[in-house]
Length: 423
Image 1 (tube, rainbow, N blue to C red):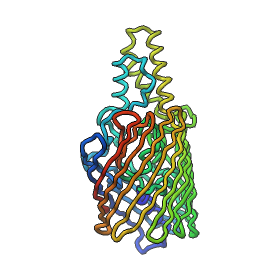
Image 2: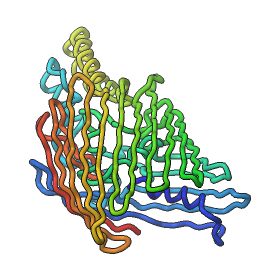
Image 3: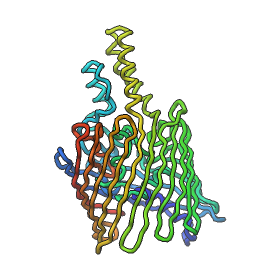
C-alpha cells in the first residue's frame, strides 16, 4: 500500500527509544510487469502493485521525548528511467470537449490534442524530484507535526479500504473521479505546501489534521486545503473516516471528498469495504483551461471578428466549466484469502455518477499475489470495467492511470502480470 512507507516512519517514531541517537535509511520499490488491455497491444509498465520509487527517511532522538524525522521519496519509472509516467492507453478522452461541436473542426481537434495528447504525461507534470513525498517533522510527546508534501488524511482512509491496495488493474481508484479522466481527480492523493498534525494512542485510535496554504493540493493549484481523519487500528480492524476539502484560486470550494471504510482481518481472510463521496463544482484546473484558450486559440480566431471570437470562447468556457465538474459516490467490497505463500484478492466496485451524464462504471477484479521471499513477490490480476454513457474508464496500474477506451460507453478489460521487489 502506498501509505505504508510513510506510516512506517511515523510508527517508528512513536516506538520505544533505541540505542542509536539517529539513523538514515535508503529504501525503495522496484515494480514492473506486462499489461494487455482490450484493443491495445501488450505493454511494459512500471509500478503495477506499488509505484516504483527511491526513498530516504531518517530519525534523530533529540531527547525529552522529542524526535526529528524526514522523508524524501522520488518516483522512478522502470520502463523509461524517467519520473513522468504516461497513460496505459493512447486513446483520447472526449468528455472534456463534450458540447463543443459549434467550434470549427480544426479548433476542436486542436483543443483535444492540447488537453489530452497522445503519450500525455499522466502524473508529475512538474517533473518534481520528490513528487511522492517531501516532508520534515518533529515528534513530540503529544503527537507529530509534519511539513511538506504528504499523503492527505482522506486518501489514507481510501487506500486502507482498497482491496487491491491502490495498485494493479483492480484498484478502486480506477473508476473514481470524473468522466474526464485523470484531469478530473476523484481524490487529492497528496498535498504540497502543507502542515499536518498526527496522533496515535495505545488503544488503537489515531487521527490527523492537515492544512495547505496557497499553492497546495495534489496539483498545487489550491488557494487553501483542509483535511482530517480519525482511525482505529486494533483487534483486526484498520478502519477510518476521512474528509478533504480544497479551494480554487478564487477561494471557492473545489474538490470535496468524504471517505469511510477499511479492513477487518479474521484468520486467513481479510475483508475490505469502503464508501467514497466526491464533488467538485469549481475545478482548480479551470483557470489553466481558459488561459490555454486565451493564449493559444484566441489569436487564431481574431480574423473572424470580435463578435464571433467572443461567441466561440463562450462555447468553450461554458462547456469546459461543466465538463470538469465531478459529482459521484463510489462503493467497494473486497477480500483477501491467504493460500500458502500467497493470497487471492477479489473486489467489486461501482462509481455512481450523479451528473447529468450519468456515466456510471462498475469494476470487477480478481488477482493472485505470491511471495517468493520476504522482499519479492509476483502477481497477476484480471479486471473488467463496465462503462455507461460517456464513461471511458479503462484499467491502469499503481504508477499510471489507465487512460480511456476507444469510444465512450465501451467496456474495457485488462490482464496483468508483474514482479515487485522491496529494498
